[in-house]
Image (cartoon, rainbow, N blue to C red; front, side, top):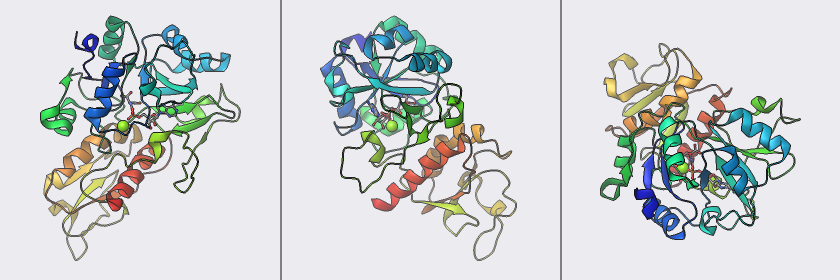
Length: 319
Ligand code: TXA
Ligand code: MG
């Protein structure tokens, strides 16, 4: 199989598609970084088939074990102190003394992990700094002629990257919001973990090196908290749109249908998360100058949606 030959392969997971490679081989991991154009100081998430496999890589406390037993397989990544004999390529962890580990739930990915019989490092299967892929076509479009072999597995059911919980420090913190929220840990962690907000002016080493980088960026600029749209804009909508107008006159019903993407007409945040990247990919293809984004409530998985949108808006302003 290609993975055994050190070739990176795009694989489906329930969060987003990953670009997987043997986590023990320097040459395989180097190819992942090269293909993505990812800076070497940004470590990768390690995917395992079982909790037992995870415990070969990192030290689990009783709390960590209970959290893993409860949420795995699923959209949760745990950052834990790495064992010296973990056998990982040092490139995977970018020299950190912790490892970010997750056991994915997607049945095809589980099957691959069992057949491969080893840890697979997998960042999202897109060029560094661009929108994450939630379907095979997004992987293909992101890499173009450099595209890796893609194992199709439908549309990712969560559609947004895993929650990253850092258990290597006290109190535990959430490094990246995702499908599992702070309150979901109430039975395991007291207090519930806070959301770590990276400080761009902090000159010390960031806790999660990837979190400060340009990220999730569409080609078009985003305009957040839109209450109306301007001529030449596409609309990323959420819930009711009947109050939205076009500046200078007009109704949004007069926009071409492919210039509007409603993440969830019913206002369902999980449905919105699942559609987020697909909608941004689709709107980014349109002949518009900006994507206007309606307000999305910051509750539950809405926190993760807004974090991705804020980064996407900031990236497009910066470049
Ligand atoms: O849902 C997901 O997590 C997807 C799927 C494919 O599993 N993967 C994903 O990987 O989102 P990526 O590489 O796009 O994001 C990994 C994040 C980066 O921000 C990186 O800095 C952080 O995890 N990370 C990796 N190892 C870490 C560590 N030891 N400590 C802190 N953060 C770490
Ligand atoms: Mg990514």
